[in-house]
View: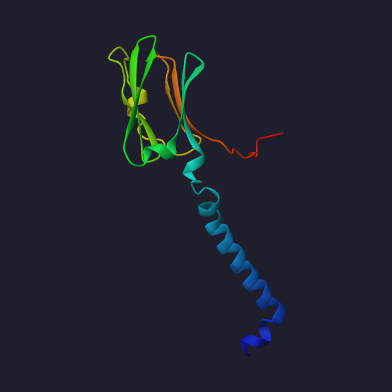
Length: 135
């Protein structure tokens, strides 16, 4: 019995379509979650619920940029370099310094928060897209 007797022409088409669909599902996350054009990304720094700084990340590729942001317990040093952002130095009065231990963020979504000093740091895009949670 030959394989051609068992598998018809349409079975072969179905197998090829399943393989193509599997490959698309395998590589789709890499394409979908790929970091966008950094020219549209902005560093947002908020203190006490008010935006104190909006800075384009495209200006951070040649040299590091350090910002000092004052809060109720002291001054944070925030560094932006090569499209990434981190808290370089937290005030000594910050007991756990979790915001400093968070490390670098480089895309939309993650947020660095210093609760004792009431400071929030995140990356935002000027051309934000509608996500799956929008109504």
